[in-house]
Image 1 (cartoon, rainbow, N blue to C red):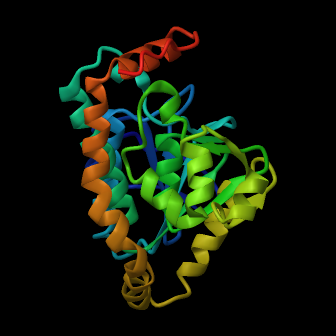
Image 2 (tube, helix red, strand yellow; image 1 turned 30 degrees about the vertical axis):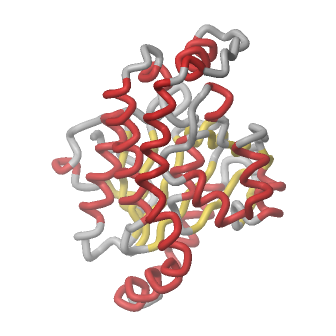
Length: 277
């Protein structure tokens, strides 16, 4: 993993721990770790970046100087467009199972980060991109951002907690609109339904997220680590218990003709011809 150089109180982080992928960058801003998804053009997730995210978070959990993390996307258009669908174009169930596990492990690690995690949503957050944001404690979206879980449109389903975490945050009705009807929501709608906690002007999500994260440093780190699981405990029992079932359902979809058709139709930029089998 490369470490970018920056100015104004941003320090390079310990790069030696993260040599697996260049698709994430890690910087330190006071007591906050800033993770940037750096996989142009759409900041998609693949095997290497998912393993890398899990490793980063596990390392940060053992860094006593880090109280919070902010995750954002490189450039201006995408926070993250989710999975790289080329991985699923051949219908390989073994690869699908591994990727479902990698997504689950990476975002569960993010969800269980011992400090406060903030998603700075600087553009489109779709599929696994939105699931990444859902795994964070707090979400800040820029005005131009659009959020959605469009997996069903290509014959797939959210496999990293999306079906559970989204329903918990916004209720069953909006979760079903977004997942079953493929509805994307704007930043303002996301704020109204409780999907994000703040909407800011374009280009400002990272700064607002770092400012909010800096407030965590004023709190007792021990108190934060104790309080966060208590807040999470009421809903964790549901999503945690169903996470494995969600991933298994994702893999089982690869028995259907529609899954291969949906993924390849997307990659070929044409409408899918559903066979319903």
